[in-house]
Image (tube, rainbow over all chains, first blue to last red; front, side, top):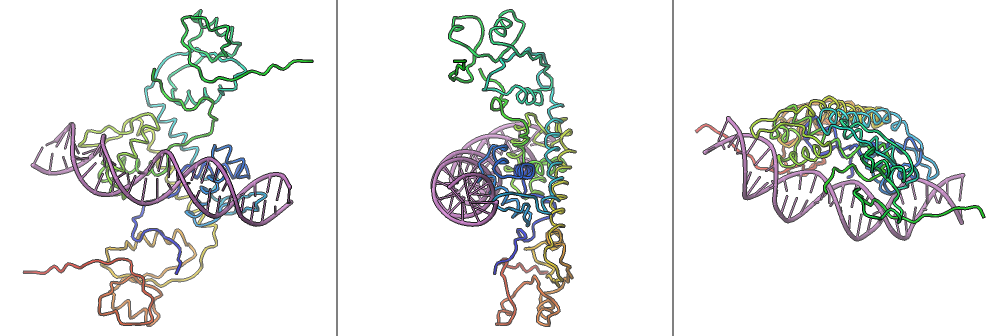
Length: 192
Length: 192
DNA sequence: CTTTATTACGGGATGCGTAAGCATG
DNA sequence: CATGCTTACGCATCCCGTAATAAAG
């Protein structure tokens, strides 16, 4: 006889869980995008992985969170009930992370950072936000400019570090430290 | 040159996680018990498992949460900063679960339940609390009594279900449905 | 010497991605 | 048909428990 699973018999009270933050994040993504596909790419997982995660969350909570019509997705009443708590949990997670980061003495200092404008490899705003959260003790001065200008600033010690495109012509030896982050071709677009 | 890992360059913002609720629950347990040992038994995991979980949380957050002296454990400043957020997250987790449970029409009905007093296998208060949270539509009448009495009540349809100890002597065929939850020996203690 | 936290290690579970299935507009 | 959610399956990773190790009272 199949019967609902209320967990191990005699499990002690106080165990809230089974539900995990990753599932909550996926859930919020689907709720906000109204789409498993878009939520999956936002959350950097495959569609199937996200589907499985949502399904396991629904199993855990014992009720469907979305009404699926293979063509559109909308919150069920249970999902609507959960959404505000879910958002709050994610907010608290980052708040907790920030609170911890704030207490750690961490690195202290000042960093003058430059970046080329057209680099596809990095995403300066996101990177800065991440860095600032992780190392709140570091003050950053950020300059966006062309590679040539940034290189000159580096040599004059007006900058400490910079993301630049390095053409062949700059390969002569110099006293700068390089780390190659990516290698890719360029496409020249011109009027005919 | 080793350098701190700020994640993939250009990762999108909005990825809070890596930290999971299970770790948060363990963290709160250790903080409240001021002891890995007691926290482990409260959370139903081994000491080593809990130790590893806390360590991974600390790695994730990039700072120690406790000052350990192999003889006592106390919160670090980072831990004190995290604790209130952690408690709030757990509170929200159960609140979310309850909110979902409240929306589900769920089962509706009345259940007369009995339980033997001395069963080590189940923990009636915790079990009832769990069940009530999952199925708020079910009203329960709970009777605690000896197995013989409970069996008589079942046969007279004064009870719907009961947890009892089943001695050999009761193995004669009857119309009750049995599910064996555990099998274990008895120890008879007596005065010499 | 005892208690308590950490490390080592093996097994089981679970999350994830690829690919196929299927329903809906 | 085409789009988009689900299922099947294989693989990697991670979590956990047992047992041995280390440190502090």
